[in-house]
Image (tube, rainbow, N blue to C red; front, top):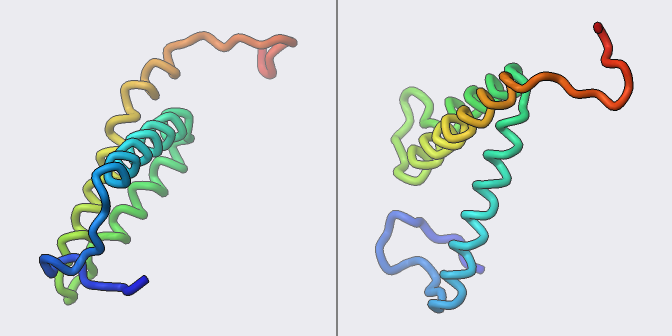
Length: 103
């Protein structure tokens, strides 16, 4: 497969409608999996994901690339979309099959 610049129109390999639809379905599925994982992540892990988004962003002195900028924004979007589920998780009482530690 040839590695081409995604910013140049007409350089991307054409996908059939079926392939494109399957790709979209997979992306939605992966987004939901990532949101579920972020919803159960620790505060330290969430901070690391936010740091990675900043790392993906263009570095000072370098040209901003459209795809890179969008990727960083999407990482932060996934963190924000997981937040309502994190809030629900925090409000639930702990349920343990055996005596919980610290009780």
